[in-house]
Length: 544
Image (cartoon, rainbow, N blue to C red; front, side, top):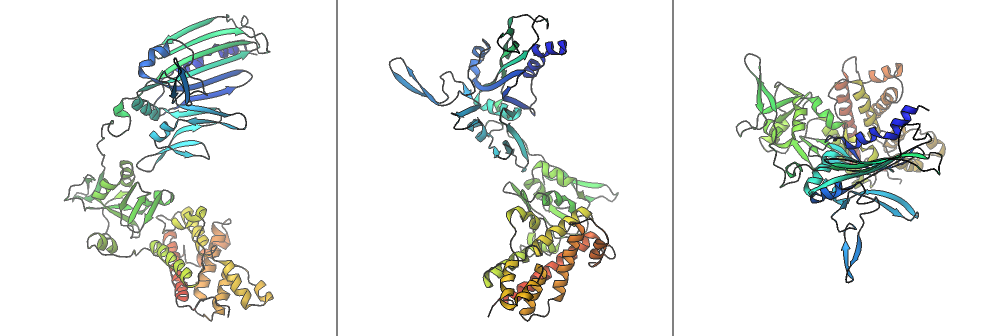
């Protein structure tokens, strides 16, 4: 064993330096630890201390509260006067977290105080045991991490809480290191020394337990205070100074010399309805997180946090009003849009212009919006007429496949493959095969039914049995789409993929963007076709 390395371990200088170091606001600070091994026993438990108790706390290295303290209790004073104590003491100390024990009947738990969690409106991610804060842009930040033997909390939110509470955080620590090597061999003496600084007090000592193999030990016990921020930095309304909203300069035109003309999104009434143009890729960020964002016809929203009118009814560009960019988007989102800002190209779509300027109700002319609208109408028609879904709605876990269907903004193969996969899952994998089976079994012999393999074949036979004769192009489209999915995203690409993609004239006549747009158009035509057959009861699934 390395004597010098063992000596340094027992001296615990690195441990003390880590505890006494001033944390940055973005650091995750350890506020609780229970780490017991053969070689050491480290314990940390943090509590809240009133500002006026600073001198009392720093007068001695012993702890004010143990990890199981801080629960409601009562105290009987002289004269048999009983008093309820919210935190189990009358010194003003409060727990930041509590270790709860249930007599080994139920598992013990570590809980961060409710006041802190509600102060920051933290969401509990129960899978990872993280506590998360959501800002006005919809961004998430992990504020606290709770594990079985350790709790870490981000310093900024901790100090903001301390500011409003007018309290310090006292990090109480008790760390022991054990060794088989004698103190004399380690050039250490059996002593106990108390030390202090402006915001900390501790005792460091060495001893001999004599009853265990690792009989020689060092003990580091004490407290360190963490100061609050100013109340003006607490983030709480009424205390924090209102921050001026930030705005971004956007390209709105070009000069005769070809220079960009920039206007601030803090637009005057005169400039508010200035059209600003962006690459279509500006929306990719939002399509990729359908659980947080929703890209709708003429509107973009982030849950119920913010939303903005947009012209997304064009092939390669997106437009928005200058004033809306400044009024409706958080600064961080404005920066995102600025990175896709381009010089004016063409004009706004007629549908958006009629909505915004002429105050007319208009439908989107984009196939991604037409498809989603038609899909919903088709499902409504099936329920109203058949009392059953012919195309089953997706489960919640698969809903993103539908939500993200769109004409891709680029010719990236990755996007195209993903969109083909999603569209096939919506259109083909979701065909109600059970419903088709029940109809076909009533019309076909057992042998004939057993020959029906696959949902497309069963749909084709169902249409045929209804006397419908104009389905061939639609059934062919479904088969081509299924083959494209199978040869692209489901398997390695090869000659099968080349053959499948050639059915849609992609690469030979169209790029991936245009090709998927046409596939989406054919999907709309298929849904419209089925909806007409259902609505007119040409497709009624009657077993008579």
